[in-house]
Image 1: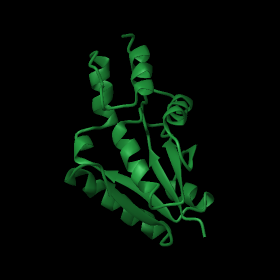
Image 2: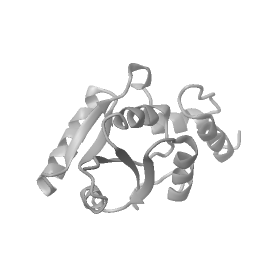
Image 3: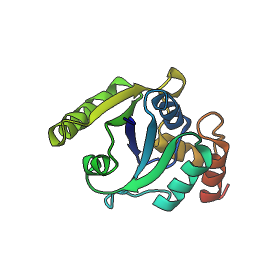
Length: 158
């Protein structure tokens, strides 16, 4: 039986921290589906298409890139996933992630949530902080793939 995991997020933009979690998830699961979230109440810097394109350019391996809106657990069932991957940077992430994991378990007890800690070198990194730094013209060495940095520089006209 193929072990399929969903790795959901906004990936606005994808960071090296995201890629680190993905790389380690691929050691555990046969296939990982990156699920780019669409939430009409959120304001994104990049469209779903742009986020998917960036992911496509920087990811190798047995990874499918898709998008979803609505309940993540419904998307996971549709994709026949056995797990949801969630990256944790710090203890502060755990509170909300734990709550979501419990809710997802209540909605479908057959789909597990697997938490993967980011490496220490990425624990400060978030898409929000990357966007802020990029908007101010900072060099993003080691924070995002080069392709993503170029896209951010174009977006912020640097």
